[in-house]
Length: 362
Image (spheres, one colour):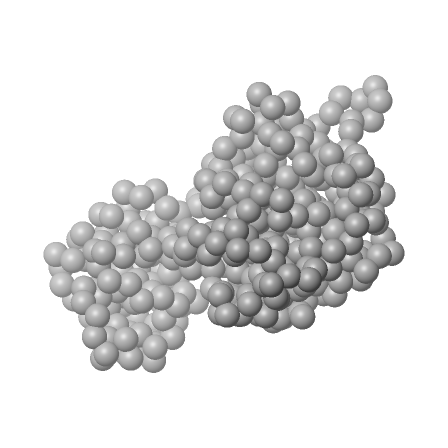
């Protein structure tokens, strides 16, 4: 499976074009399939090759090439250059060579949208930068709400600790060999939706998940093995929820990159806001934009209010989930999401918001 973004490069200076081309090609995440030195050549290359993304100087974008993702690249910032990028509808503006890593991240992220078949599942990641923010609570309850709308798969991408399995009370049927996350990713490119469906464990709420492997097998699961798993999950359900590790490592980055929506879980305290800020900074190269949203969990009386999310992060929270002790006790005892609670109703509204149009829920 080719998971490398195909790039048409449009730059007037040959020496800069050569530097950019070698950098992108060596990365293993993007490949330049054509170069152009003027706007006419750029339009023709895009027409013939249909790349995933265009990387071009703003001066060559006056004649807007027909591509979904355009990234503007210049060697120095100027008002005229910025204006040309805006007129061209560029998804990002980067300076070479200082912002080359950010450019690569944006080019690689374009692949997700360019190659996602119509009708595939909505992929929603749940992450929390601070321990105890309630990522497992949010992921399991959101998956249950999505399961009430259609087919939903919950994948625990932090399988060493197996928090999702504990919260759902997931265990292999007596006398049957378990199918774990490690077994499934071992199939690699041979894994398809049907094979994944046959390996899933079902909870009474309708949520389906993979059983966790042993800790020694779990630590061997790497980011490079996730792509076939996420492809299969996207073809096997209407919605896929990814329970991301707290660490901002390769697995978290891979999950975030493939997500249609990423929920950063916050609690109303300074430590959580600080962790959320660092998460936003760390994921900036992925160019998530409006796909990154914030959810306030365990909201209760505090000196910090949900409205402070807007002040700190520049946008209101997508949802505010109140403190719900009964739901949390059920989760801690391995009984999974509780259906008829205030939290469940809040997650039903959140699920509707996430699989339809972007926007603040609360």
